[in-house]
Image 1 (tube, helix red, strand yellow):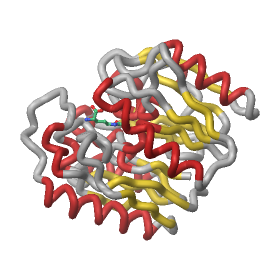
Image 2: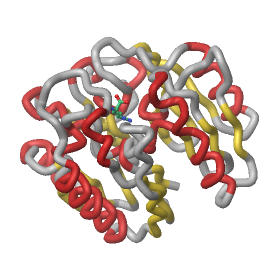
Image 3: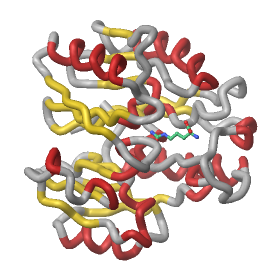
Image 4: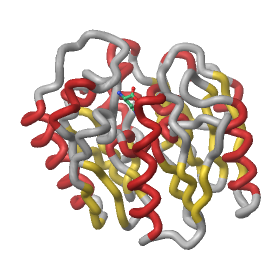
Amino acid sequence: MFTKAILRKPGRSLVKGLRSSDLGTPDHSLALRQHASYVEALWQCGLETIVLEADEDYPDSVFIEDVALLTPCCAVITRPGAESRRGEIYEMKKVLGEHYEQIYEIEKPGTIEAGDIMMVGKHFFIGISERTNIEGARQMISFLESNGMAGSTIDLEKVLHLKTGVAYLENNNLLACGEFLKRKEFSIFNIIDVDPAESYAANCIWVNDNVLVPSGYPITRQRIKDAGYKTIEVDVSEFRKLDGGLSCLSLRF
Ligand code: CIR
């Protein structure tokens, strides 16, 4: 179970965030309202939220998940593969110091963004992507192993981050789409298949027996409900324009 989450408000500079497609420019005031609704959804799941002020120097800093991995016994500050995001880690170090005694940090030439890391109990799947390299994964796995946990890598083909296409919903249930449906690494899980027309909805998050689902993906929401979960819909359309989803907007621990 999670008890807390750290988030960062979107700044006006959000409009300059990285994006791989043209879904339009995010509307800052709508993004702020959507962010506030997301915070409320986490409250509904019983979490205490720590909401950091916007950092205008870093347009993508609302996607706070990418700059740290939080586990039950330690935190790891990442080294984002996107150079424009590297500086996001500095304030994160200070914030995490208030919650963790053991904090590690990924070092050059390693790169890793935690959107590429999926926690399944004490095992962490790490996607090797344009943002996360083998050296970053190697360092991460060694930190995990020295704390009684484990990790393994999985090569990504098309998606930005591992969790763009897959979400672990606990109870051995894995929400998956596209390239992840038939991967042998995931054959041990009950797969909840995401329709290709709703691929964005593969990025859901499990929070204390609830599943947050992006608004506008009814087939996926129904499949998750059919698997026995309570679902909460959250509209994140403005973050989608920058390739961000529900998981990226918080660090849950
Ligand atoms: C980026 O390209 O870094 C941001 N525009 C989106 C990051 C999304 N993060 C995530 O999926 N964990």
